[in-house]
Amino acid sequence: MSGQIQYGSARPATSRATPAIRGGGPACLHRFPDRRLSRSLRVSTSIGVVVLATVLVAAIFATPGLAMLALVGGSCVVPMLAMTVPSPEDDSGEELAVLLGRFRHAVDAIGDAPTREQMDEVLTLARTLGLREEDIIDEVARVRASMVAAALRDEIAVGRMPVVQIESSLPPGDVCHFAAPVRTGRRRTDQAGRLLLTSSWLKFSGTNDLSIAWTQVDEVQRSGSDLVVSVGDRSRGCRLSFPTLEDAARCGVIAAHLSQLAQTGSLAAERTRFATMHPL
Image (cartoon, rainbow, N blue to C red; front, side, top):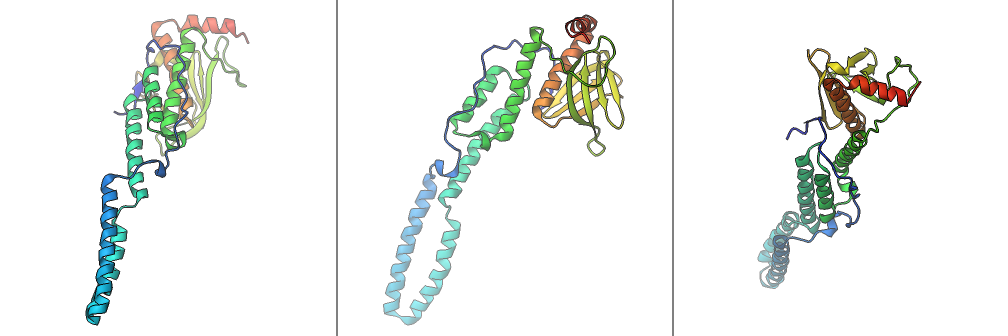
């Protein structure tokens, strides 16, 4: 899976709140049981040490030369056994890695636009595996961003579009719905600036300003904390990198909604409605 999704019309979502991660003990190494194979190896090593000690004692009282040979051999064998036999911490670390891998695979599988049911499932899996938030902080951030996006889509669906008050002036009838610091460019030539999503335009203010009308936008895609806005001629599209996943998720939902309104021809009516509700 590429982890890249295309925003579009949201699927119907339930109003049931998604439970937060809680419960479950800490996913520390000592919480996981030792493996049977490692336990048997440790028992065998202990028996071997006892046998070796017995041989050494017998050799001391038998032949001095043999005793010296046994002592030298024992001094080499015992450290080697100590280094090669897995410790309980090693076994527990492997078990923890397996549990973390299982959870991360589940998060990757649902992508950046999961349903509420899928989000519930991965959060339940985290509790079942006994993983705490600090153990899976990156994955939890991804799920929370998806939860923010789902909640925002629900708000927009019932007519509650966010409105942001900004210091800069906008043309009459234009309303700002989102504002955040971003970076745009081709990675090595990224420019830092500020992004505004108004009811008419996507505006980036930086070293080189950029304005794209929603009627020109063909596609809005999010991949992690990046948002890609594509236009018809492909010459004015842009990649926007946000400081947080949640900012990228919010921006993606709002940008997709405004672009869809423009494509369906209802953007002008929506702009008039917002201007009436929020007069300057």
